[in-house]
Length: 116
Image (tube, rainbow, N blue to C red; front, side, top):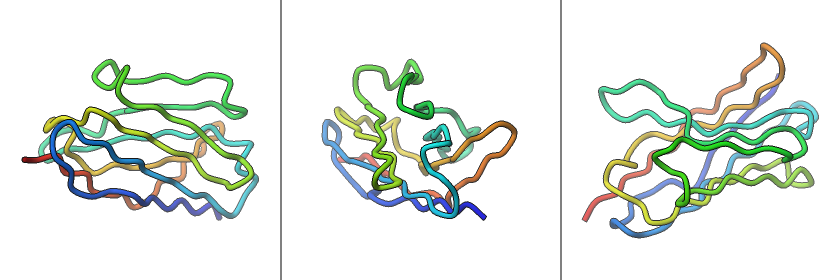
């Protein structure tokens, strides 16, 4: 059973930065593509960023391009989401997901609040 655990959320002022971490265990981490999604109150869960196995490709939601960076360290079984220039509209619960074929393993989420 693959377990996914997020950390690093919190409260920050507009323009600030946070780095989210997601650690996976229970399988070979490097075999999985990894993604970050978010869900704001009253809204659907949306893709924020995605990174393929081997970190060959990344893609981002238009709303975060140029501000967020996804990366992975397979030696540490960890994927990161560096979030800069945060805006109020980035407030949401952020979820990490490990993906392989039709399999998807989700974490419990971490809250990010951007407010002055």
